[in-house]
Length: 159
Image (cartoon, rainbow, N blue to C red; front, side, top):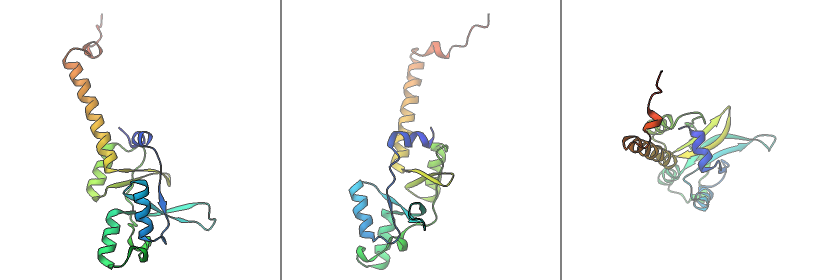
C-alpha cells in the first residue's frame, strides 16, 4: 500500500498556521479540528503563495511551555516549531512511512512531491491502513485454505 492511497481514503485537508501566531492559537486550531499538528507556512512576498517552513505538534507545545514557563498567548509558533521536516512522497510505501516515523520518533509525516505539500498522515493513519491491509490478507488466506479461492491459485494446465 502506498501513501497516496491513505491520503485518498482519509482526505487531503491541510491545516496551516503562520510562524507569528501564538501557541494559544495553535491549541485552538488543534482542538477545533481534532488534530495533533499544524503545518507552519510563511507567505511569500507575493502574498498568494505559501512556503512550508516547519510543523508544530502537541509535543512542541508541551516542550515550549515547560522550557519558557510563559502563557501560551505570549509564545510564538516560530520559537516552538520543528524546522527540520521529515517528509515522504505519495509513492512511498506504508513500510517506508512506518520506518521513517519510527527512526525519527515522530507522529506526523507531511507528504511532499516536487516541493508541493499533498497532505499529512499521522501514526494513527498508518496503523489503521496497515491493520486494514493485514485483515484483507488474512481474509484471502483463510479463503484460500478453505478452498474458496483455490481455482484462482491453481496453475493452468499446459496441454
